[in-house]
Image 1 (cartoon, chains in turn orange, yellow):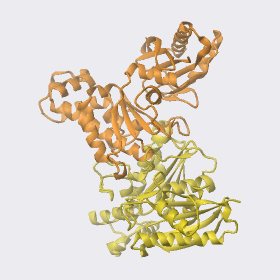
Image 2: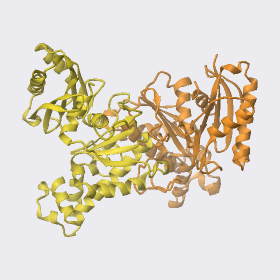
Image 3: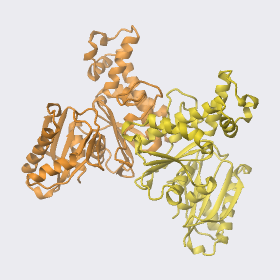
Image 4: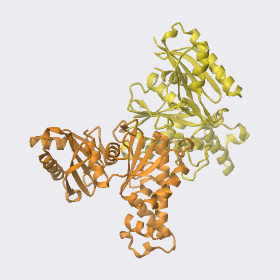
Amino acid sequence: MKYSIGIDIGGTNTVSGLVDENGNILSSFSFSTKDYDYLETYLEEITDSIIGLIIKCDDKESIQGIGIGAPNGNYYHGTIEHAPNLKFKGIIPVKEHIERKLSEKGYHYNVTITNDANAAALGEMIYGGAKGMKDFMIITLGTGVGSGIVVDGRLVYGSDGFAGEVGHTIVQAEGRLCGCGRKGCVETYSSVTGVTKTAIELLEASNTPSLLRNIPHDKIGGHTIYEAALKGDKIALQCFDVAAKMLAIGMANAVAVTSPKKIFLFGGLTKAEDILMIPLKKYFEENLFVVFQNKIELEISSLNENNAAILGAAALTF
Amino acid sequence: MKYSIGIDIGGTNTVSGLVDENGNILSSFSFSTKDYDYLETYLEEITDSIIGLIIKCDDKESIQGIGIGAPNGNYYHGTIEHAPNLKFKGIIPVKEHIERKLSEKGYHYNVTITNDANAAALGEMIYGGAKGMKDFMIITLGTGVGSGIVVDGRLVYGSDGFAGEVGHTIVQAEGRLCGCGRKGCVETYSSVTGVTKTAIELLEASNTPSLLRNIPHDKIGGHTIYEAALKGDKIALQCFDVAAKMLAIGMANAVAVTSPKKIFLFGGLTKAEDILMIPLKKYFEENLFVVFQNKIELEISSLNENNAAILGAAALTF
């Protein structure tokens, strides 16, 4: 049996797991990313968690390596570059740092890194609904909107390792300001943050009665909007409608580039299920170029959100 | 020396050529596609042109096959499907037809088909500026806007063979009606037809003096607008500005999907050179996601427009 160590670096938590080649997570660690102000101590903590997992493995020789999924992780450079949701800024040579730290402690393993959405795509391809599929896409809907794209059985990294940023494609020229500094990106409408922005805009722009009016603006978020939508709240439903429409255009555009067979949706916002998926499917078909209509399935990933990130990261080494 | 026969099926003309592996076109035929009302006689004419070229080749054994570039050509199915600019509608099994017709006349060759922009990408990769490049894109700016996308050294066909339709990505939700029936596609702004639509819209929406006011609307086209733009005509320049802006967003979005090193521009509209390229480069950088900024070159293809299509089609068989 082959083993791997998969690590998911998130803005909130960092989770690592010892994974076997069948996709079983044999042991895992988790700690809060936000507790670390200094890169050095943060990387030290990751290294310690890796060593903890190595020690737990009965067959250390069979560990294929360490795989890391991280926001703005770069496969070619082994770096995290300008990740907006991490405290650590600039270009961080994560691969180099962790390999050196491991080596200093007598452990010699290769570290491979990619962005979190690419890791999710690998997880989907090896352990999830995309098994045996050659052309597919995964869209991650969390604080941001990410994507991992597989063409002809291979993850698309592109010339610089940053391919797969469907969240930062523009669907409305001169549209709403995005966190990235440009206007009209999918992410600014269809992330959890985007849905929240829409709620506040709609509440301020009208007098339509809404359950959300009872909640202070800074407490409005994906979950409260979803709860209100479940109760038929017009404004809350419209928030998901806007998110679905803009995401649908972004996805239809990405389809026109790589023509996937299926698109998997993944992450926080997919918990809204039909409230998101019904308008998403409708707008997606409406916005597809004719040769792609009625061909492409949309499906919520069946992988457990926490596990998928670790599994995908681990799959980098298999 | 290996040889191939490359055929470019266009809405206006059909051109075929005998090509050697160094990219020399040794002999070629051309006839008007528009003269043929019946598919059967059209395919007969193509077959005759192929046989004419086979006869001209001294070393028939070394002909690798027949490659065809065509609008909506499908590599997997060997078909042309619902091509808007051809008289022949529906799904045409071109590969099967031509192979059978050749075979009936005693010639046994494989026929391979792809869309015209993919053929141009292959031409660029094998004989043009993309030699040795692993990740690039070509955008064809003619009556329509097409694209061919290369990822990790391989042309992207996608799950159904129709990948690479950047022209039919939406950059303005609820924007101008496109010939494909949807709204806000790149093609409806940035094709020769799109530039012409912009001219007529602008002429009708204002009283701004313009050289184009002396021309009947049905005589306004890419060339007249370009001529006026060269003389500093405000409306003509604005037509190219709109085309450049919308194309720039579509290209920036496609970059976020596959992260190419370079984008080649090809076809009729590129004859405008700086009038197109200066605003295009400006808007492209403005609309790129931060990780891609100042990394991606834009370049007008150096391949001769007529030759590139034949060379690319021929390259399908090498």
